[in-house]
Amino acid sequence: MRHKISLMRHSLTLREFDPKRNVSIATLAHDYPAGYMVAEHAHGSDQLIYAKRGLMEVHSGQNMWLIPPTFAIWVPSRMVHQIRMTSEVSMRTLYIRSGLVASAESACAVLWVTPLLRELVLEAVRIGQLRVQVSEHRALRDLIVLQIAHSRSVPTHVRLPRDPRALRIALRIMSDPAESKGIDVLCADARIGIRTLQRIFMNDLGVSLDTWRRQVRLTKAVEFLVAGDSVKQVAFAVGYSQPSAFVLAFRRTFGVTPKSWAMSFIARDRLQRLAKARPILHIRQNPISD
Image (cartoon, rainbow, N blue to C red; front, side, top):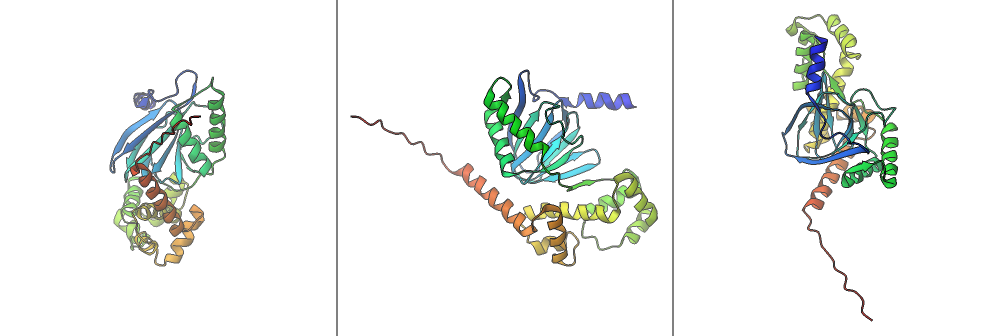
């Protein structure tokens, strides 16, 4: 069975985007329409996947992450994953030779994208390939590696339990995070005891059901905020009876209020759309004649 899984993962590994000889970081820039799905695959190199515009939904095994432009996702080499675009997405990806980021996560992780890291990613994509023989490319590579190594991970992913009964409850909560029924009612519907369910979540996911439910609500909140819903609407939509409680939970996780986060996201998206639509003016300077 283990050999079969290994063969499956090997067949899903794409090598065409990996850094070639004498290249430390290769890049890819691609725009996707809303709803587009990148099928399950892996790469032979580590990846930093960043969307300078739009919202990505990344799946790997039992895990799901929503990635807006304030975040990027680190995907280690040979990690099978798939990506769904929940809106129009301008994706910018770095394919980093394995081992360059020595202290990087061994599993997928969501990272804060600082203004400096964002500009480093965009510059690397503009160049295309960072070659080891070019001193400027080496300097840019070292800065990127340093920024990734020191980026703070953000606990905004949702992990699903393996147990079929717990999974049914988890999917029900994800489909409607504002579900008003108590856990006792959900457990009765799934024919599972409350203590058994709590034990499954702790053993399988490492968190309590209440913590997991809060992660689901905040993850869904990001999707609603990107869609333009008000903070009050989002709070009620993800199951908070008081918007102030939602604001507090959001701020503890993201470091800013949902309103500030949403305004930053929308402002950046509008600027990028304007820049994309604005015609480029070519100014020719006439030589000065004596």
